[in-house]
Image 1 (cartoon, rainbow, N blue to C red):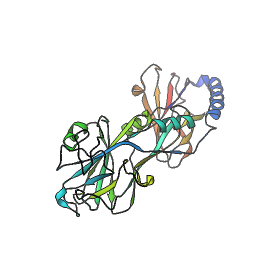
Image 2 (cartoon, one colour; image 1 turned 180 degrees about the vertical axis):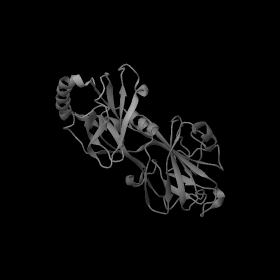
Image 3 (tube, rainbow, N blue to C red; image 1 turned 180 degrees about the horizontal axis):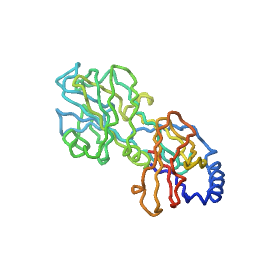
Image 4 (cartoon, rainbow, N blue to C red; image 1 turned 135 degrees about the vertical axis):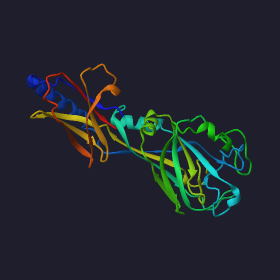
Length: 320
């Protein structure tokens, strides 16, 4: 993620200039960080979803009121074969909301949870039932089409099982976690936050998922976006964000440089990168030190010997 840059000469004879810079920086950042600090949650609903069937590889079921994740040996009906599901959310409204609350791009994603509601009474005999584990993946390819087919009238105008290999890509797609369906009516799936997934959410476009069985016994049927019943049963992606961490003060202790920062997130990794050349791309800057926070809020990073050099150097604080 983008960090907060602080550039200054790290030479001991520039101590007076350094202290003036410190006061200026603190006064600026006190204004910037005096707004909202608490996390804000945004609920996204899918704009397309569909299940696909291994035993009907050219059929589309994008218009169905339910989605399915099933292994090949589900306890309810092992003759119906494997099912996978695709789902996609548009995060443009979410990004606009976070930008309005925190300032444009001045926020970081802190959590993402996919909520699903079981359909306990399927209206068609093609579905399997059973408990077990399944996997959720973030997928980079959002070009698939939902289609209008349903179990009673399949079509060929959208995603099918035969198209999976053209949509999925092991070089780009990322596993977001394994989850256990044990028969609960509501299932909340806290997703991992790898960089590619977070970047995709922050871009404000389509964010796609692929869901597939881990256990051959699972037969998880849950409501899709096309379900016409209770709106609270529809799938949702709930994302939280908070203010981007920033530098609030700078001090010197012997030859060590101490950066004070705000809005840290527990478990988050915050690094200081250094360079003697301001024009270098960030990926060519040298990591100096990294802190992994035990608690949220204010924190500090100590750069050993950071103030003991006469060579001009520039620093950036970066959240990972």
